[in-house]
Image (cartoon, rainbow, N blue to C red; front, top):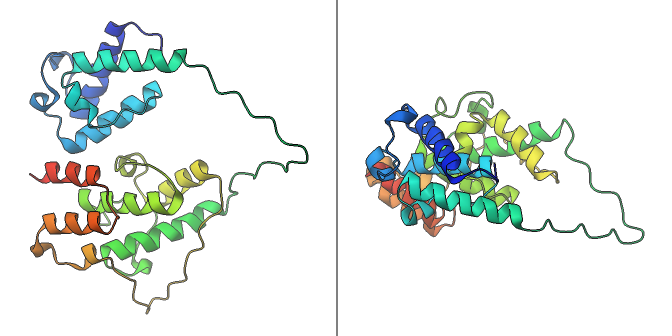
Length: 242
C-alpha cells in the first residue's frame, strides 16, 4: 500500500475507522476530528495498531493530536509510507567465518511453556491461584478489563522483550493464542515457569492487592511507579475511564 495516492489512503483509513467505530464509512466526515467522531482513548490504540499493520509503520497514538482529522492523518500516513518505501533496505551483514547456524524457532513445546508463564503472571495481577485460570478461556471471561489488560501487557513486554499494546488482547483473546503469538515473535528461549502448587499463594503486585474502592487512579499511579505500566498507557486508560 505504500504507493497509493493520498485519496486512496484516505478512503482506506476511513474504512478502517468505520470498522473500529462500528459505523458505515459513508457516515464519516474526513474533516471532523477523531474526538467528535467518537474515537476514545482505547479505540485510538486499536485504530493505530491496524494502521501500523496495514502500512508497515510505527505511528503512535499521540500522533493523532498533531493530525486530529482523518484527512490530515491520511496525508501524514501517505507521507510516512512513501518515505518508508524510498528508504534503502539495510544490507545483510556477512556471517563471520565459523559462525554457528541461527537458533531455530521455538518448537511445539514452546507455546505451552509460555502459556504457563503467562498464566502465573495473570494470576498474580488478578490475585487468584494460577490453577484457577483456564488458558483457553477468553480474557473478558477471566475478568480482564482495560486496566488489568494494560498492566498484564506491560508485564508481558518486560518478560519477553516486546513492545506490544493492549490491542493484543483483542487480536489473541486467550492465553493459549497469546502464547502461540509470543512464541512466533520471540524465537528465543522460554522463561522457565516457576511451579505453582494449588496450596501455594501467588505473589500479588501492590496495584492488584489494593481494593478497587481505593480508586482506579491510585491503581494507575501505583502501576506507573512500579514500572508495570508506562505513562502513555496510564494516560490512555485514564482517558477511557473519565
